[in-house]
Image 1 (cartoon, rainbow, N blue to C red):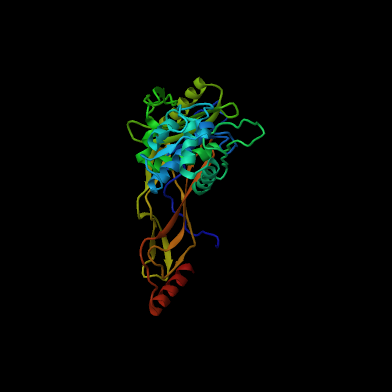
Image 2: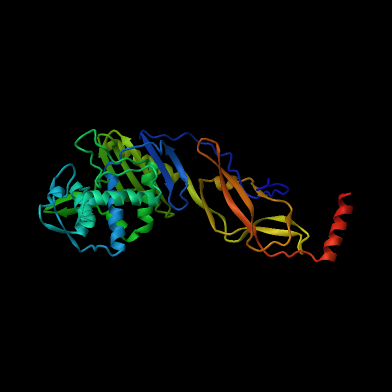
Length: 386
């Protein structure tokens, strides 16, 4: 493509004059995303390899929900509890050997009670073996765009042999998975907000201590192993605006530290940002001159509705941006024809600008002038330029 130039329309842009102190977390890895716009609001070692621990169970649940939607299994279907699932290592829902348990109960055991036995029972019940289920986990991870993830089991439990591979992922990948869970399976996502579940006469409360609290938390999953530390994937909703954020962090030192950092990251994401509509469908963002056209100016439009997450009050500090295209446009130009780019910016947390980009299109049809009119136009511009 040739260099764009010739015409620049001031319209919307750089968000400036909004300074504030640096935010930090004691977690080793962390991300905060706005759910609607999927803009990254905070990041710390977001792509650093980490052990997901029981956050692995988000993927296990995702696959089961997908299988239900695809009519592979039902919630009422009963899975036999094998000796492999019966082994009660780590957290458990206390499954009994050779019993048959409904998928619905196993999901509650997996999500609410964080049962490692439930994860094995679901894996074997759906795919026939844990290894086959793990293959499906990794295939699903690639399909969802989790490029830095590799699963070796459906529970997140560390292997007995420290030389054996462990589940590995990143904070970014777990955020991608959490978003897919909330977006694609709202009818099943409610499992993650269930406060407690009783099975085999034993009642256990959800390990997500933020449920039902002041931050609007409705999921999603905690995790702990010695290798990964204490971590959590969290979804929280602003109770006044309905705005949702997704927080993922790992590597805190205790349950208390996990709860504290979760609250701090949620508060950061909810209180310091808000969502705004920047462009509407087919909104005119500028005009471009047209050479030898039946009209001299082409309206430039953004085709889609665009919303962005901005710092609180930053919408009041917008200044300007630039439209880039090949100038002048040569007639004929068809409505909807791609013409160039609209660049606009929002200052990042540390002060650097993070550019946004939208494609701009022709807002109407402009035909080419006939031979006589074109000749007159050429003469006019010749004398005008001289």
